[in-house]
Image (cartoon, rainbow, N blue to C red; front, side):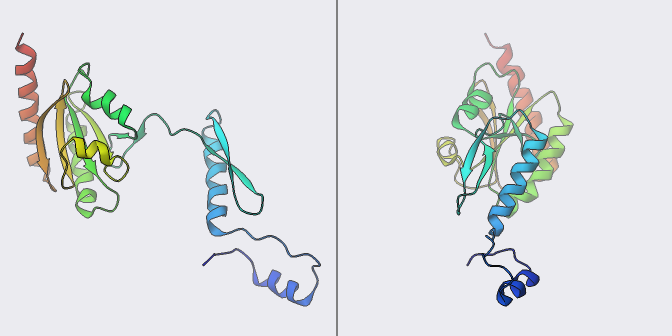
Length: 192
């Protein structure tokens, strides 16, 4: 079923024969895509674009590449590619521990965990980095990380998984896990 924009005035005029040629109508998804492209191009005028073809020979500009760093609902960086995951999480050059929040937009417990992760991120600003991985978009990454249930929070440092928490957690539980990970990282740094 296609949703179309047309007013009852146009319908009545067309039915009375006042227009000799029918006016093309836009489907709802095409209008939303056009509006989104206009908003994005006005906010980010230097972003490279490509043309997306729509039906009836209409086209609209659309972003060709996603932003390198997007802010996730948990407040952390959204990991969009496997390369980003390797760079921000698995790299041995990461200066501080990384909290990786594996979630999905349809997951109710993940939505409940978002504010908890955000609060802990604010509490430990400068001590940990927070990233979020959508398991729908990066299923291979989640599989390699051993994720079998969401929400799952993992802590990494120097490419190693230090701690895993499965399920929806309270702020105190997550804060205690962060403290434990920070202690573990200090011990790892003291080893030769």
